Length: 71
Image 1 (cartoon, rainbow, N blue to C red):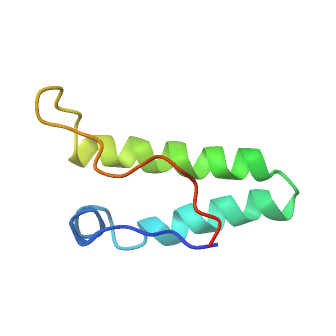
Image 2 (cartoon, rainbow, N blue to C red):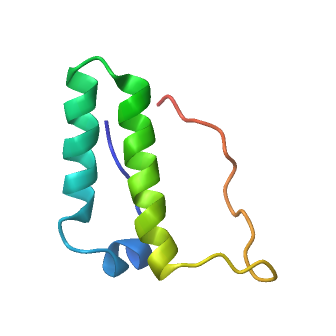
């Protein structure tokens, strides 16, 4: 699997952040816990991003669709 981030987010999070997310997700995947692995990675990412990019009701808009890509 791959984790994609834009440069602004990547510059904000700690250097090893994406490796830690990948490792925890992969650990759960290897146990056959795919839903838990995805959830853990997404929740951990959201917690960190909230620190650097708090939601601003008047300014924020969803720039990308929410569809899952299987490519």
